[in-house]
Image 1 (cartoon, one colour):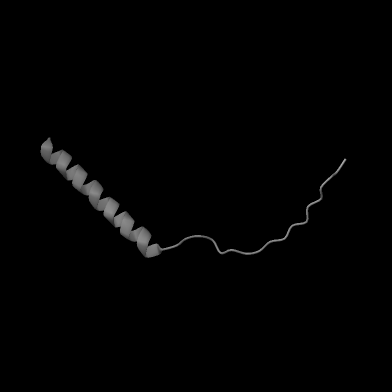
Image 2 (cartoon, rainbow, N blue to C red):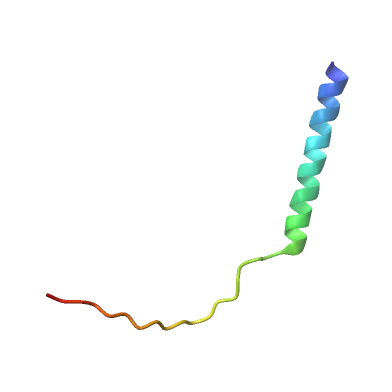
Length: 45
């Protein structure tokens, strides 16, 4: 049972490291910024 838990933890750590490296490799995934002007009508009573 200990071997199984050790292997499971080792696999999870390895997957976490691979995911972290993949995220760092892909880099910044934020969308491109663009100015957008939308007219707004305000009703004043």
